[in-house]
Length: 150
Length: 150
DNA sequence: CAGATTTGTGCAATAAAATTGCATACCGGC
DNA sequence: GCCGGTATGCAATTTTATTGCACAAATCTG
Image (cartoon, rainbow over all chains, first blue to last red; front, side, top):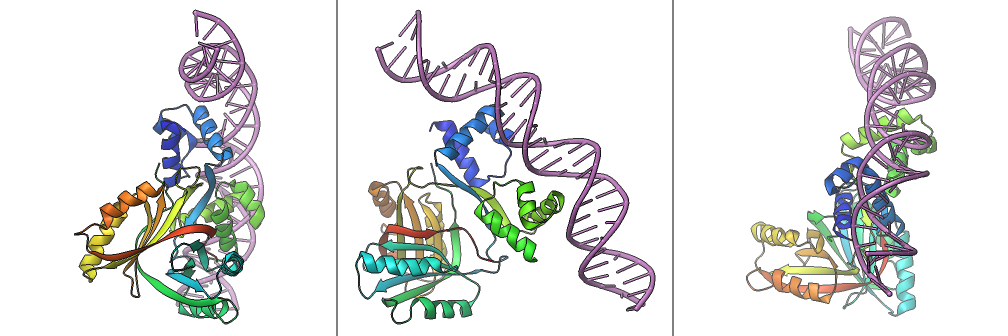
């Protein structure tokens, strides 16, 4: 992981559709060397995967919400069971167990309020061990990046 | 946006490194038609961009935290000013203004506690208009996807 | 509803890009 | 300074993307 690898990773995190020759020129390597480095980073797992990011609004899911959850009964077993349920929901794009007075945090991508309504009925009804939950609807997205600074 | 477009988008959200011919076969189109569709989706902005996702731990930022922020003085101007500061921080990967008793939510990717410490001193010190902030450290990531269901 | 127009499709040729073999250059350890 | 392992550039090869074109399907229009 020298300076060239870092630069490659930074470039690929911003735009992975660039050609190898293009990247090679930018980092000052020959195409073949550049390609070998990228392959090495992939097989080492530093680069996890390459994906297309959609425009949420144009994909019909412009609404976003953050939900903090407090469980009724705590402990590893109960947390695991709750997260298993949450993870199955397509609207849940991020699910974490966290430290502090809250037990879990969920990030939701929703089509509309109706979907949120049915989602809550499903996940937060009786018998799901949720003591209380607090919803914050996203008003403005100031930043949302997948880039990990190196 | 017919069924074929949806399928293409779903496939590309999961793996954008597949060859066009491969995708074409899976959706039942010729490579040329398939390519034209993908290009159309890109120029229409449905596909925003293609990026490489790194393994956070292997990229040296395995620590994650969620911070809720309550501002001292509220209002559009103050919110904007705070978010402008937050957005500049490399550790901040997501920054939102939200509804509810909290004003903003930040998602952080950190190298270690030291970085968190200096981050807080910088962003939550006097004169930054932050009344109080609450930090939740991520213990377990149950789900973290960029896929928008279609 | 027929004709016209736009939009989408497959095929085949072409252009561009990725990939590989190989000889050489570089690096850390001794 | 020498050695094993690793990285590099070049050039040939293979794979992939891209384009022109003729035709088919869907949509519009009067």
